[in-house]
Image 1 (cartoon, one colour):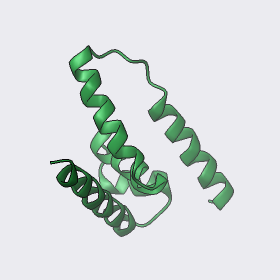
Image 2 (cartoon, one colour):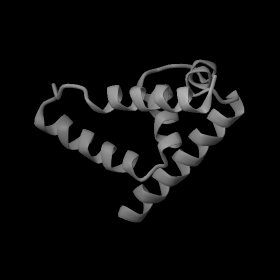
Image 3 (cartoon, one colour):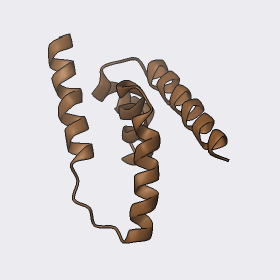
Length: 93
């Protein structure tokens, strides 16, 4: 798969993930806003890897296929994202 095709696939996926209708109540909305702020600190690749696995429930192999990267890269992206989010959470307290 070409880099151009892979990029378009990733862009399309991101657009679909971020343009969902808001159907949560205000308390859940506050939690969603906090989660979104944490997601925004991540790189695009980290964010998509986290959303595919934690958000959509895909396994690492499925995420690697969508991202067109090895499974180990998905694992590294998720680990890096978790560390970044952990730092933000710890610094807020």
